Image 1 (cartoon, protein in one colour):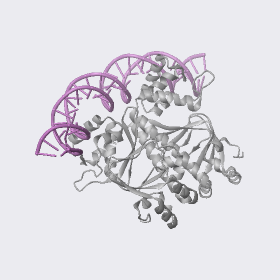
Image 2 (image 1 turned 120 degrees about the vertical axis):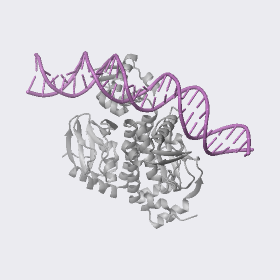
Image 3 (image 1 turned 45 degrees about the vertical axis):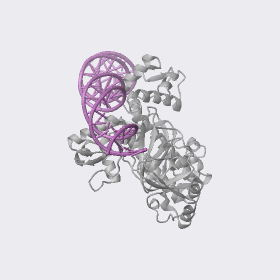
Image 4 (image 1 turned 60 degrees about the horizontal axis):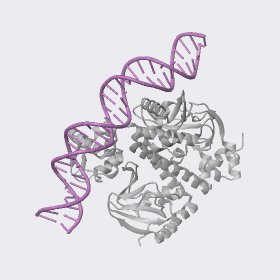
Length: 225
Length: 225
DNA sequence: CGAATAGTATGATAATTATCATATTTTTCT
DNA sequence: AGAAAAATATGATAATTATCATACTATTCG
């Protein structure tokens, strides 16, 4: 069982407020495992008995709509936590979490987290700040979905993917999502997403080769949004 | 200067965790004022130096999009707080707050709230729970905007307005919003909103008389969403 | 009171986006 | 490697929604 002290999740999440003693306690009760790409961490409606720390990899938080489409609300990457909202509200999750890359995660039981909340105020404040950040993103997301065109949202999403997850040596987006997943992020039909990608390609703003997408004219994409 | 002890905001917000001594301190430093319908409490980009308690009335939280339209993200009513997100994140607001009804609000300075965060853990937990509730609503809102038709969103919004704010003796929605505001809630053009309201009216699902809207066939509206 | 203004309503049309159909390419699995 | 399945691509068309124009109605204000 590895220690939590040097873990990347500590560096980037509310957990940075924990002291040595608390970290040891957490290391003691955590369980560590891997999640393969495409596997589910939790499903809409599940009651979570703790939170997940993402050591490596990326997952999507999504919600299935009545029309059968999966809307992706957020991508969560290494260093971040998963499941706080549900744990704090003491409700079942409204979102499911599915790996879009192989992941290593740690599970920390609910009781332990609740103890931290009660005894470590800075931890509470950090957590609150993180949830507030999510709320701001969600509000901005609502405005984008309501007021921008699909084309603008696609351009914005591509830029964000490059910015948040970087590029491979060949210049293509490191995080490779399926067309369906990209459509789920921007809130459109998969065919429409594919069509617009083709269009961007023809315009010379991006290059497509298989699943790989490279941004070749960032300026032009930025001008659209 | 009235006391905070019996205030409705205490009953419904994170403030319920405050003890007598804290309430007295808060009563001492708060400032209380009225906001007329249409007046702005704060604007996008403002740096808030505290939070607002809503004693009476309703306001809209909205964000101006590049296309010039105002997207309403949330309606906030009596008993709720305003400005927590910005205060906790220590950032300027991303939303503006404008009264849609005459309001009575109290302003509580930032330092005072920060003290509560530091000394009263239950207050922090309550606040966190409240922000988490907003986050869940925002996530659900994103899915609705992305995956539902304007017609479905209008039906849902009308039902929500009736449910959250009630009806007048004549059966019409108590909260009277302009067509433009309703359009801003569902994320569509004002004309489209007006057109659909007419359509609902012709179908016999609602009745329109001036600004007043009455739901006359709730079942049918529910069936749509 | 009556003009001015803002808000609501509706038609005509254009633009955007979804849906269905069908290739084509890529990936998976044995 | 080769068949089957999944993902991607593209055309044709329909549905939805936005935009522009204009008329009508209610409200405000001097």
